[in-house]
Length: 123
Image (cartoon, rainbow, N blue to C red; front, top):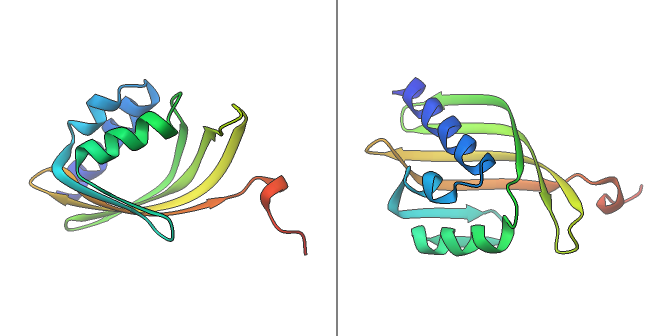
């Protein structure tokens, strides 16, 4: 099961990289719930679809550094680069905790940190 979950997430990431957001959403349960810790909670595919339309004006560049699986859970650690509202690339580090149900992505808890030097507080 854990290897299947890893393969499913990597398949979803590949779909996003191609701009195939519907292909990614096909891998999610209808009641998928995404929590961006400290920010936003999305409930259901339509909410995720709308979020992607706003935030993925072009496909993000996602790099997965580590995948750790246990039962119905998968943790992905890596980096993502997305264009901001001005069209400039913004770099983030992330740790995503995915829960699977019936072979689909049912829940996400995303811990995302902006790592651009211009946005990091100077000490």
